[in-house]
Length: 244
Ligand SMILES: Nc1ncnc2c1ncn2[C@@H]1O[C@H](COP(=O)(O)OP(=O)(O)O)[C@@H](O)[C@H]1O
Ligand SMILES: [Mg+2]
Image (tube, rainbow, N blue to C red; front, top):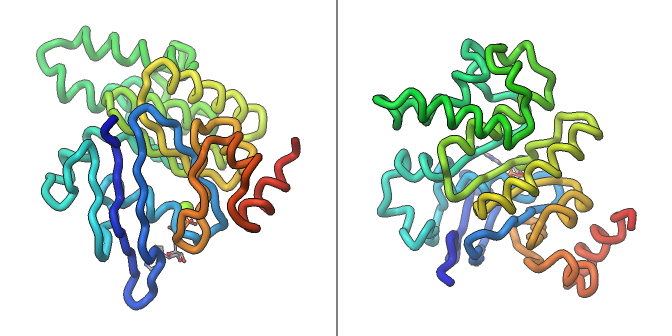
């Protein structure tokens, strides 16, 4: 199986400050990779290098086998969904218009196809059709987050990057959204990279868990393997905070 994402000797420095020294990783298609690590260790930087929002200082990044140095980054981002914490919806557009944003660009002559897509994705993320004509400020945090996910998925990406997507919602909504995203992953087979600071969330959602510390990947394994065979004290301390 060819990896969907590959990093080879990736280095990232902000001015003189090296955040990532030498990162090497390979991610297979269809994995749900959860990424955990302390604040400031480079998780967001790692994620943003995959969709070209941040460029590496050195090294190579391949997405679907193509070196990002050789691809049009705008084109690349059309194929990579990106969901972050809090509302990043277009405030002056309704739920329908937000979700329809990308499908409308494609289906210029087929309005029904866009309509169908909006309905389908609202259904998948668990949004009631009555929300369709509301504006973002008329929704709860959890509902806004669902619209954000639906909007990202409606563009039919093969990769979904999620940066602490459920960080700002209450515990009940959070556990509902966790179930939704797990189901979406199973239904679509999309590759997901999901940053969280919550080890429990990482172990529950991930088919693989990536533990980062100071810009290094200290372990990248199946959740069970991580719990049974943590590679160093940092992973041990993470896993020991896990309540079960
Ligand atoms: N644009 C930037 N300029 C300078 N330093 C940055 C910039 N973005 C992030 N950093 C620094 O890089 C480190 C990693 O940041 P980040 O990837 O956001 O970490 P995380 O998401 O794991 O909390 C932090 O020390 C942060 O302060
Ligand atoms: Mg971050």
